[in-house]
Image: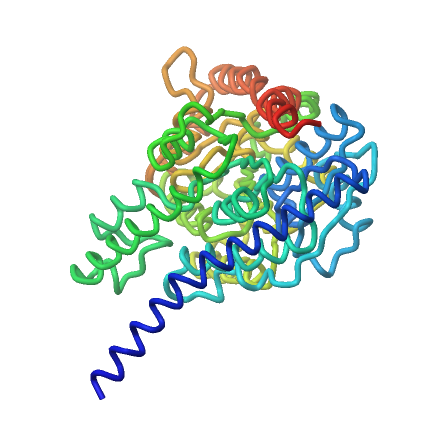
Length: 479
């Protein structure tokens, strides 16, 4: 019986070693024929953007659509293709939502390739080994995308690095990627080593030395796989200093990595009239802009409001209101909103908190022009488009002391302060209380400093950086 089992295992191993390279070789030859056939048929030169959640309406989607518009404007003969898994949204509905949410219009039609296997990249499908599951799932989705349409230049604009070897090595495409947030980072490994509770480290694992050790081994193996796939990108764009440091550390690709800050609508937001300063008995509105995802840590902001109540008078407390503004991608996100509503009631904050979901751009501007303080609580936020948008509108921001907000956006030095940084609910509450209690003149100086510091994050600067970075790809692809 044992000999039979060993024979079976050896047979499986040998077949795997032989079959996988053979399948890859056959696939490469097949897609090379596809490319040759396209050239003979005078198919237009094409750029494909891999963004399965293109209709989500978040900061990552703003990057996608600004990049699409930049390509259309600078390369009018190039065909633009977007791979999407939003099966319930027609092309016209997607374009309409882009106009409504981001105020972006396109000069030509965009071809959408609908992917039917998006379920393979949903986190809910993998209760365990989520990172590995989603990454391998992206390979399945990438295969569907490659079979459906093979572009000349492939750009992963959502962070699925495991698709890069598919389109580069097998599909023969020139490849690029825009990394919003590394799938794994050294900071995540440190948190697990320290056995800290986090969104990616459950309590059962954090409390167990053995499980923590096993998870570190799993993360290190995954980090190697992630690095291997990332090196198949001919050009790497990152959205912040923090992301750049981590990608260079993991992928070892300093020469092909370019920092391109994401596009923020600073121009129209700077034109908004700034909210009046805190007056006697007037409302004091705080806003929090960010998609309703677990990593955005909305509960921390609710806890900060609970702590704030202990630091201000009842009169001030009655004037305070925190408005959450964000988009929901799916039912899981809507459930999170409901959970936060329940938490606000549990903390007796229901009269001081409001939730707004998937609001249009014009309503967002109204909310920004009627508030003065902004909150953002994500740990190691890769950049923070919502933070920049609030600052452009003249807000005093309180953001997490980590990631992009700390390294690229907020300056705390006296004399050049343009916002505040905090690490936990008590620090957030103290920062908000400090803002409320400071003199109107001091508040105004911080708000003016915030507004004047955001021009480098404008849409125009993004387009310049993006086009400058991808220009060599067009020449290498012989357009």
